[in-house]
Amino acid sequence: MDVLEMQQITARTIEKVVVHPLVLRNIVDDYNRVAKESGKRVVGVLLGGSSNGIVDVINSYRVPFKEGDKDPCGGFFYHKHHLSMLQRFHGINDMVGWYSTGPELGDNDLYVHAQFCHYAPNPVLVVINVVLGIPTNAYYTMSSLEKIEKEVFVRASVEIAPHEVKEDSGEEHLLSEFQDTTTEIAPKRMTLGGVSFVDAMESYMEFYKNQVRISVEGYDISLRPVDLDISLVKHFSSCGNVEFVKVPRDPVTNAISGTSTTVVLRGKGASEKALALNGSDVGGWRASVKILPPALSSLRSGLTTREAARQYVAHFKRYMSRGITVKGYDYSLCEADVKRALVNYFSSCGEITDVFVFKRRALVYFFEYEAVESALKVCRPSQRRVTGTCFRARAMPIPKRLIVYGPDSCLATPTY
Image 1 (cartoon, rainbow, N blue to C red):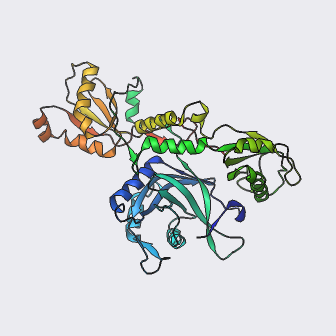
Image 2: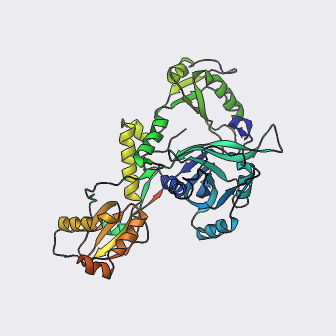
Image 3: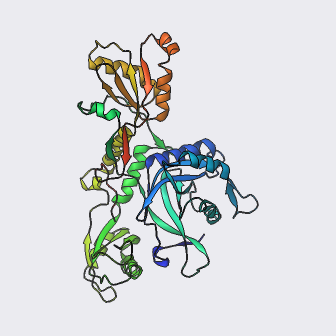
């Protein structure tokens, strides 16, 4: 499988693919349900949006897929099912690419990628490691400068979507005058491929914590971005593995637009080795090298990776919750007693993240989507007669808080 690095390609690039954690969970769940025993991979469609070279993946669905038995380079997916699913998301999310549970690129992936190109311009391929539940690599295709007639995969940077901005839903206006109080409930373990969500996020943060980020200045901005990229990779390769070079570029002209380029290194002693090259000659210009703080803002605050992971997961669960409105309880009871009764009654339905009590109704939020269905079932008249309760419930149609990308975040996007 041909895979090119950035310096070997033309200017039309995808710089970064941002994948939402819920997408990873859905993909791992699909794999565990349909392919874990057979060991075959699962293939599906990625939904979201793209802008300025950044692809945001916020949803996904699986498509029936069959590898070529006789031809290892063959393979096809069920187009009719794909079109049916795509129509359901029309006007909500656009198709931005496809995923494979890999764990590595397959011999037939260029062929499969070509089929998905009929449905999306310049789609991305994200290869998921279902054991860990975190994307290992993302790719898109481009013609090689050395082999113009041949399409090849090009690597793109991958991140787990960290930006979370709270936007009010209709129900949230009811809560504006009340202080959030979280009920003390033993949380269930959300898993990604056999490990907890917290463990997966900790691994992700450890990955970024162990990176060495340096700022390089002193170059001539009239250089071609690709030439600067190549020279920096060559110059700092003695410090360790050069994982990424972020040259500031104008989105229209592709010319260098800034005087500082970020180089990401990994390896023992990479920081000291990079600082030792401060003032060294790089093909006619002298490099000014500075060490940059960690890419994740949560790690800059002094939190351990475990603490930051727990903080992120708690925030993610709370603001991705879906809720029900509950009526029919004894309105003369105090707030604490009502909360206790609701928690005891609905705790078997799923993980409860919040309970709010008002004068004539209460709001109960669950993290799992299936929990809402279970909560509605236990409030049916037949069940109320069995349990002896008077709870009446209906589902709220939208999550407690919508999650979008923005500057107000509990876990900032890695900045290169």
